[in-house]
Image 1 (cartoon, rainbow over the protein chains, first blue to last red):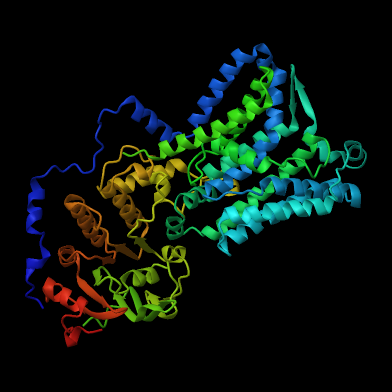
Image 2 (image 1 turned 90 degrees about the horizontal axis):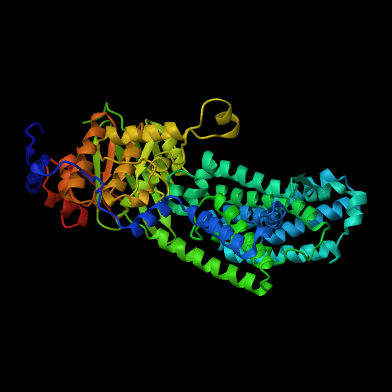
Length: 360
Length: 261
C-alpha cells in the first residue's frame, strides 16, 4: 500500500484554470443602487423605521388638521393613556408573532385575569396583593396552556388560541356571573387594584401609571429580546424553526416559555386595565385581541415570524391612538377612524412583504 | 491494521426506523483520529440518517455510539455539540433574518462579564462580533463587509462559508459536513475543499458526505460506502477507482472481501 498512485489525489484538470483566475472570492460589488433599492435595503435593516416615519407624518398631518388642541400636553398624554392597554397586549402579542405564531386569546386572558383578581379581592376577601399575584400565576398558566397545545399536541397557533379565546371568555362570564365590580366597591375593599389608574400631573399632562407601565414593559421586553440568549432564540425560532433546532435550541421549551411570558404580560395588563376602566368589567375589551394584532402589524413585525423590533408595536399602538385622536378632534365620524386603521393595517403588511423581498 | 489506534467516533449496530421504513439497519461506523472519512451512498441509502444519528439530530432505536471510547446517548444536537461534534447540515441550519454573528453563536451565546452578564444574562455583542470576524478571516473564506448583515443577504457560497466557519470554529472532536459543495460553483467548491484540508491540518477528524466523486477522491483518506441502511465496506481511495466506488454503492459490484464491514 506504499506505492500509492497519486493520480486521484490531485485537483481535477479543469480546475487548473482556477490558478490564474481572479482570487477575490465573493466580494460585494459596489454596484450603483437606485434610490428605490436603497430605501428597500435600509428598511430591511431597520424595519421599525416604517412605523416611526408613519407616526411622525401622522402627528404632523393631524397637527395641521386638528390644530393646537392636538399638541396640547393633555391630549398627548391622553393618547398614551388610551393606548396603554392595547399597547401592553400588543407587547404580549409581539412575542408570539415573532415566533411565527399568533395569539387570539391575549384579550380574553387579560379580562379573565382581571375578573379573577377582582373576585378574589372583593368577593372572597383575599388581600389585594395576593389576589394580583394569583392573577399573574393564572396568566402564566393560561399562556403556557396555549404553548403546550401548540408544541406538544402540534396544533396550529391560530386554532389553539381561537379555542382558548372562547374558553377563557366563557370562564370569565362564569366566574364573574357577567357582573361588573363597581368602582366604589373597589375603592372600599381593594384600592390597590386601581393603582394604575392613578396619575401624575406634569404641566398640563396627566400621565397615568398605566402609561408608564406600558413603556416599562416594552423596555424590559426590548432588553430580553435583544440582549439575552433567550431573546435571540425567539427570533431564530420564528425565522426557521428547524434550523434553530439543529443549532441546538430547545425550540419547544422556548415556545412554551414565550406563550407563558405573553400570558404573564396579559395578566399585568389585567391589573392595569382595572385602573384604566375604573371597575372590573367582564364585558370590556372585547375587541382587544384583534386590536393588539393591528398594532403589532402596523409596528412592522412580520406575521411570518423572526423579523421586526419589539419597539414597533409600541409605535403601532401610538399610530392607532394618534389617528383616533386626530380624526376625533378634526370632527370626523368614528367610522372613518376604523376605516383608516383598516387601510393602515393592509398597507403595513404590503410594506412588510416588499421589504422581505430584498436580495443582495 | 489499525488495532492500536482507537476510533474517535465509533458506532455499532445502530438502527433507526421511521414508521415502517428502516433508514439505518444495524449500521457500523468508525472514524479514526486526524482522518477525512468520506461517506458515499445512493439516494435513500441512509447517509443522512447516519449523520443525524451521529450529530444528535435523531435518537437511534438500537445500537451504540462511542466517542473516544465512552458511550454517548445524544437526544439533541446540543448534546453532540457539547461533546465537541459540530455539523454542517445540507440546509446549513442558519437563520436567514439574523446576522452572521448571531448565527455563528446561535445556541452558545457569550455573556458579558460582570454583574449584567451574571444576573441579567446580558450578551456580549461586541466580543461575539469580534470573534465571528476573526474566525471568518482566519479561514480566509470570504471578505464580509459587515458582520451584522443578515445571512439572507449573502450569496450561496458565502452562506456555506458561514456554516463551515461556525463548525470549524467550535468543533473540538469531530466536524461533520453534509454535502458541503453541493450548492457551490467551481471556485467556491475549491475553497471549501481547501478549508477541509485546513481543518484536517489542525488534527481534527472530518466526516464528509458527498455525491461528488472527484471531491471525495481528492480529500478523503478512507471512504465509507453506505448501502441499504448499513456500511457495505470501507475502501482507500488509492486502491480503487471512482467507478469502482460507484459500482459498490449502487450494488453493481460486490465489495472486496478484505474491506467488507
